Amino acid sequence: VNLDRMVEGILKRDPLALGKAITLLESDAPTHWPDGDQLLERLQKLNSNETLRLGFSGPPGVGKSTFLDTFGSWWVNQGFSIAVVAVDPSSDKSGGSILGDKTRMSRLAKSPMAFVRPSANRGRLGGVHASLPSVLMVLEKANFDLVVVETVGVGQSEVAIHSMVDQLILLMQPGSGDDLQGIKKGLLEYGDVFLVGKSDMSPQQANLTRQYLLSSIKILKGRDCPVFPISGLVPEHNQSFYDYSKSLKIDPERRKTMKAQWFQHLLESRVLSLLRSEFDSASTGGGPKRWNQTLRNYKERLGASDVLPFTKCSLD
Ligand SMILES: Nc1nc2c(ncn2[C@@H]2O[C@H](COP(=O)(O)OP(=O)(O)OP(=O)(O)O)[C@@H](O)[C@H]2O)c(=O)[nH]1
Ligand SMILES: [Mg+2]
Image (cartoon, rainbow, N blue to C red; front, side, top):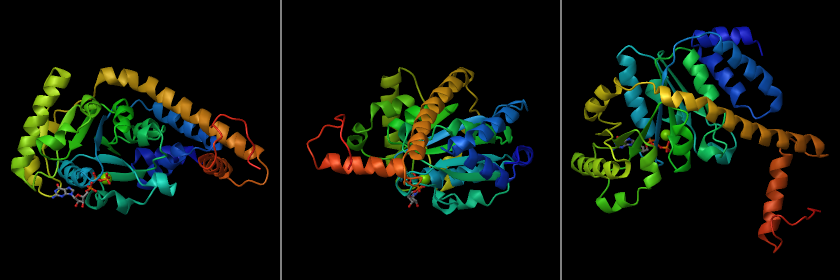
């Protein structure tokens, strides 16, 4: 890896250099870590300004990507740049990240002021990879005016993402009171700002949902939180959130704990990766997938037997 050229490319916001840097940082292969660490150290020395980091989370299909495409395009039209990392929920199964067309941000992706990147989800930290803070740092050093992460809200991911961004925006489904009873309290606890999605379908229902959220959040948190109806398809519904978004700020308190969390996630993830790679190189005749395959074999055998998971047994 030519780090000089990579840093230069990052500073120019060259999508190719940004893409390569992110791939390097997301690597679980211990041989890639020294280069990635050095890259971050060099960027760190550049002393640029901090960039507002927003998390957008919400249940699958609630309209996160569609809205980010619309919101991002508006943002770019205001003369600002934006970087979006979309944590791809499906990549867990396929084992790798899926290409850009899957992020549903085709309009934004075409803008020279925007950088859109799907990120691998390796099923840890509720779908957020431990390298995400490193990726966000690269985008921050590239001097984007706004850095956004899209994650699928499954409960656990909100907790992880909350410590990685300045503000966590939760996109909620419009629904009847009964549907809303089912919203996990934990989910509401981690949100800083709430959006009621797809409000073009029924503005009336979106408003009812908004009222319900306002009062539930007040009870739960003991304070008010902003709730806006939005639509990814009809931008006219978004004006109040657009106006509000200009007032969103970096949270210095959260920034303090961010690094400690980053350290912990990275440490845990690297310990596991080291174990896996030790295992792979120690096992004879196994390809790079030896750990995964062994794990799968064990799981299959365990499912069909009455041996307990911690009982010493041999596969052959
Ligand atoms: N009516 C209406 N439909 C929408 C809106 N936003 C998204 N949709 C539709 O809802 C579906 C899911 O939209 P996405 O933007 O991919 O939702 P998502 O939350 O990013 O989904 P995942 O990333 O898979 O969790 C698509 O078929 C969209 O066309 C909206 O504001 N109004
Ligand atoms: Mg999406």
